[in-house]
Image (cartoon, rainbow, N blue to C red; front, side):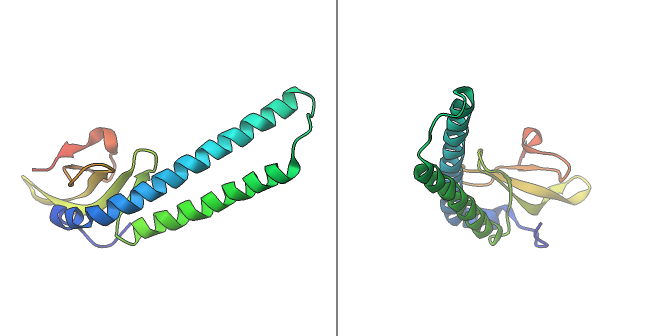
Length: 138
């Protein structure tokens, strides 16, 4: 987690970059997931048929592409981490930024919670809470 505490305005200023980077990461993850599922489905068919022949070059090429997607997803996530965010859910596009919310007892450290597609940070939750416990920013 970043040592820096963000204001909602600081996170809002990052949203154009964040949207682009998270969109790329989500698309790469979607492609990797689809390819993984296709390879698993083919593997299950081979097992069910007692070892049907498979085009080994094609299988190897797709397995290598899956490895490539893994590397690309990690690189895309690293570009989000560079902004100071912590990826919480890649499929939903959730990113938290450590920040402060003014409460009755003063400033309270929290996670400013942004979801891909939102045009600004609107929610926060405690460090020991998650997406389901998001609360509107004051």
